[in-house]
Length: 525
Image (cartoon, rainbow, N blue to C red; front, top):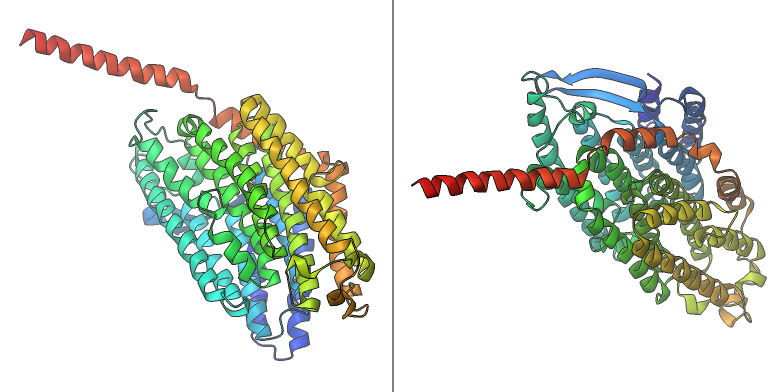
């Protein structure tokens, strides 16, 4: 029952908050409950054996038995750190909201706790219908978080976010239903929504025929997850959502919710459709590197700090996709590691941008100059997170990007060569931002605040854990990778064992035999 406890404890505390009236108590209980959930989640590091590739701590109860749908949750090395990332970022985000969220405080914290439950459920569900329910449930709290506490264009941004992601998810639902019907062939006529039963399916594949079952099902899932990541060219909802979202919404959106898309590729699309994955690898690696370069170039010309960070997020998530579709252990380990890195580094950047915005009420880069002298503690934290974002050695970003580029090089030298360009561009726009905002003479705008721009003790306290993670993951990555490598290797060895060229040859030979037989019939007639 441990995993269920983790999933539903935040929702339980959300209901408990409805009984509290005092604002301070609401904030304290919300923060304390998420810290408690984080402490509980740390036991997973001890409970989950890093030498076992299979699911652990499994809980399975029949839910809708007539359709083979169960409440089925479990954890392995792939989902372990994503669960911990969620429980780690949530209390820090709530603590960071104490000065920015001043209206409808109870509703805000109730929605945030419900969102945490939905995100945890998504990473732990191994029944496809259950996963879909959690995956979609996460949209509802975020819809209201942006729509109520967002900026001037919040309605436009939240509707765009909801429509894009809901549209993609409908294709995934159609794919899940099709796979459930297919399970009858391997379960003696019974239907199942278990992901493990889906893995048993041998779905017909014809490489050159887009309408072959495996190709169609692969793209049903891929579209839903690509929008969630988001990949180029279905990324346009993200900058609007980030810019209009309140700071806590931007942090959790970048830090955790985008990872639900890359996790979906890793857990569903890639292992369920191995031949289609290998056949279309070129497309997703191409879109990945386009996203890397495009996101970096667009970030470089932004005049709004938050929008710059939003487009940098598009660029960094492109690296994750390149790593996953390299389909080797280096690339996939780097991709999964970069999911964690992005959550910490980009989440921290959004927190920092929100902190300075609360003081100055502007995000225009041109308004700032000489901020390092006016807010030295803020400048130190921003520089450290910047170094992480641009993958400076000894930071977490370096480890993830190095593994991704190594895996990409083994798959395609051209892809790796273009992806390296993103590293250069990333350093360019972030360091240029630092130069313009922090250095140079202080202008009248900065002088008008008379030394009130630096961080307070609460803000320093919530940033310190993020900085610790930046260096811990950069200096001692094996602590994390050794707990994910076994599960990733098992996935690679057991789900990508098909040889695409042999499969295509078999398909081609089959077509030739059919053509030969038809020709004989025609000649005989």
